[in-house]
Image 1: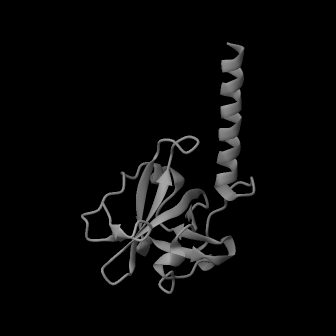
Image 2: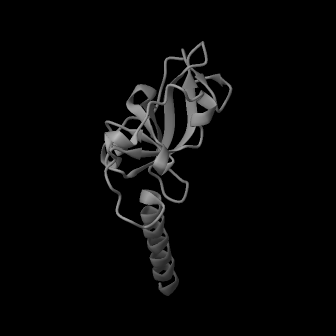
Length: 142
């Protein structure tokens, strides 16, 4: 019983620390992103989007780009983020349209202009019709 209680407390404290760190990387409360802080991502190649941090318009962390779906000309169409889960287990991949992303260079992140952490959690599992290619896997997306 004592071991289970200790293990539960340890997991909860790890989860809480991870959540605070994931929000801003500094333990500070996230602050909204002003439009004046952002630029277009039209000049970024698909490969440059990989592993970039993504934040919501409210400044909350949405995750890191773990895949980019490109069209037949190699232009990025969607980015894939992993949401939810605990200690790397569970969760789901969600897609964000690149038309809804801007770059906040001062924050070294992409900004999802119409998404917050709360709305990102409600996004459906990422799927595609097979017309896009996964940059991460170098093949047709599922």
